[in-house]
Each structure stands twice: as structure tokens, then as C-alpha cells.
Length: 158
Ligand code: NI
Image (tube, rainbow, N blue to C red; front, side, top):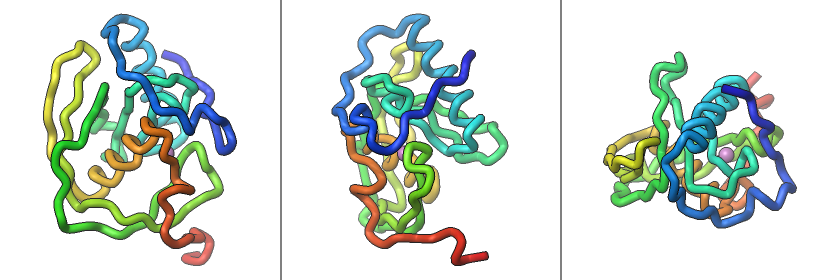
């Protein structure tokens, strides 16, 4: 495993519509391993492939807080969204200075493939649902500045 460089604001790679992953090979496994290591190293909850410069539909998420909840989402799609929403703050490793409030569904159900190409479905809520929505937006070139409804300054709470 290796750390990859996280691309930040202004890099046009963040605005691309990512292509599906077609080969479930050792290169994909290496990318997913590197993405997880890079996410943990940066204390993030999620990371999408374009954030390390790869224009493919692959995401890693771990909202456990203790590195016990890693999931890999390859070619993910949200298939159900709750009508009930949540309003809360988001940040992004690619926009390190930026925080803001974003409305998301409280619960989403998604379908994705794992690193072997096997499909799975999962229903998640609250922070996990927020992370899924945020990371899937990255795959379509939609980033935090597009989504913020109200700015948030973490220093205000100190
Ligand atoms: Ni992000």
C-alpha cells in the first residue's frame, strides 16, 4: 500500500464525470488499498478516486471513527433515498479550508460492486448516508462548493 497525493481545489480532475470500473484486477485492488490508506492518513471519512487523480467510479468510506468500518464502493448507485432529510456540516479532503451545511437524505440504499466485481446492496443512515452522498457526488464532478447551502466556520464553536 502507498499513500497517494490528494488533489485539491482548482484541479480540473475533480470536475470530471468518472468512467465505470471495468477491470476487477490487481490494479483496482491496489487503488482501493491506497485510497483507504490515504483516507486514514488524512483523517477523512471517505475518499473518491478522482481525489487521487483517477477518473473511475470507485470510493472508500469508513465512518466508524476507529478504522473498523471500511467499505469499498465500485460503480455505486443510490437506488433509494428517504424523504426524510438531515441538515448538517460537511468538509472535504480536497477543499481543506471549506466547511458548510448541506441537506442530504437521512437514509439511502445503494448498490455497488466490491473489488471482485460482486454486487451488493446496503442501506445506511445519518453520517454514513451523508458520506455516501458526498462521495458519489465526486464521481459526477460535483464537489463541496456546489453543495454548500450555508457556510460553517469550525472556529465559531471554540
Ligand atoms: Ni469530498
